[in-house]
Length: 300
Ligand SMILES: C[S@@+](CC[C@H](N)C(=O)[O-])C[C@H]1O[C@@H](n2cnc3c(N)ncnc32)[C@H](O)[C@@H]1O
Image 1 (cartoon, rainbow, N blue to C red):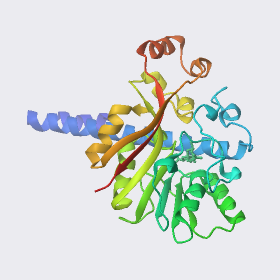
Image 2: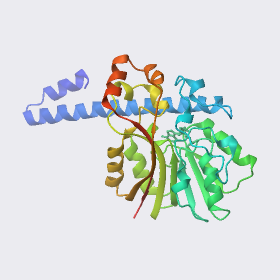
Image 3: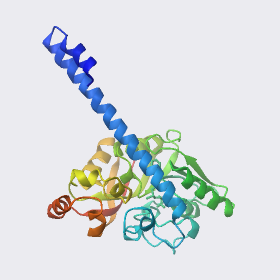
Image 4: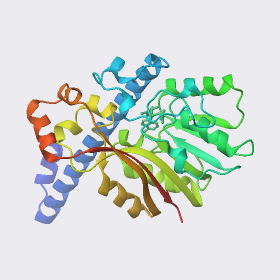
């Protein structure tokens, strides 16, 4: 609360009004602060994934070249080579599951991929929807959209479209999508509830999703949550599994199921590059594990 505003509140005669005024001003200040932090995180993610996109060679992991120290996304990523529709140029090794495995995509479906990167999962989905279906990828990093479009143009695909946009405000009509997929993206978004609400808005009734994401089995120390490089690596933004599932339920999704999960071992030296020994020990002592998980659910 700034001083001028504080004075306005303090000068109110009625104690209740004074208290309400102070509370409202504090809420406003908190909201601005959290909006600002959210924007900072988003801009950082956008910048870093722009760099990652540019720097990844087809065979290399991302983070070794871009700042997460020695961590390679291979600790998260699955092998896609045997998937129908696989295009090596689109596989930047940035996923943490294979969401199409559990997405039950049918011929003719309209599929939406949240945070589509260079298009890896979109091209797998394209093979499943066939010529009568359509796949839309949304990503907020311009370099990723460009790369995905180049990949699509190279194969002359006509039913794959890449849209620039934020998955918290999807550039998609209401009730338009049969299946939503996403791979290792929602952990990067500070307000996951907004993403879940958007998924619900764009899905047709009886539509469903399959999402691969990074989750945590317990709380993470604040210093880990605030380490921006660990955020890019997928660690800091990992929400507690029970909270993640509860949020989905609260938004009204049904038949929520975890289809696959595995513990991700993030090398100690990677974490230690970004937090103090003390915080690292706190994290180790807490026993919190980082998981990659693929979840499905339905909109009624
Ligand atoms: C870890 S990469 C995964 C890319 C892709 N899903 C894959 O598996 O190859 C995360 C992607 O999510 C995008 N992203 C992160 N936050 C986003 C947001 N709020 N809206 C749209 N895209 C976002 C990034 O630009 C990046 O391309």
